[in-house]
Length: 153
Image 1 (tube, one colour):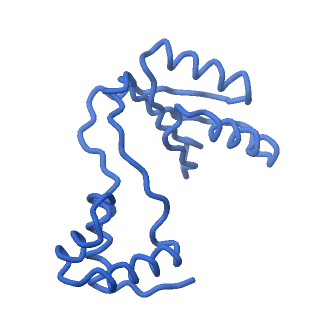
Image 2 (tube, helix red, strand yellow; image 1 turned 90 degrees about the vertical axis):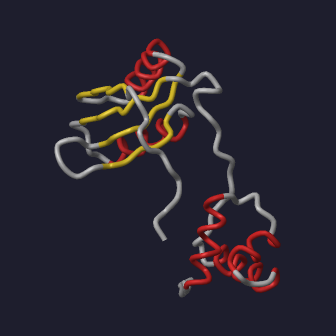
Image 3 (tube, one colour; image 1 turned 90 degrees about the horizontal axis):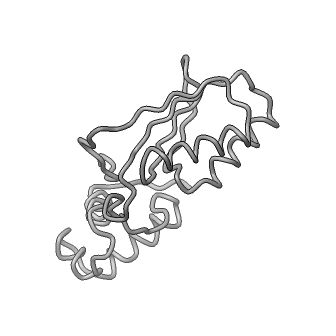
């Protein structure tokens, strides 16, 4: 379903991105509308797939997940069966926060969040025991400079 997004929709989406826990009354007040039209727009945006699931953003370090690794993967395998197993393995691993297939020399990049280097090694050992990988390079993030889930509207 295709949906046209106007300026009011963008204002509503910006408010929801900032804090999806706001009441409809709060959102309506901030965007200069009333509750019912805001609710109808949100419903239409959900039905159109513009708005997905709602979640909470947790503090990884407060939960003891202090190490963030970016994992660069090169593979010599490109068959459908290998890719199915590889993607299934990534989806099953809660440490993998993001996984992207890339153009260029690196085939995949993963964002992996774990407790420490030892926990990363356990993740790595499990990964290579499940699928054949040609080369893995892990880069430890020393400092998170910017992290956001807010899309530019």
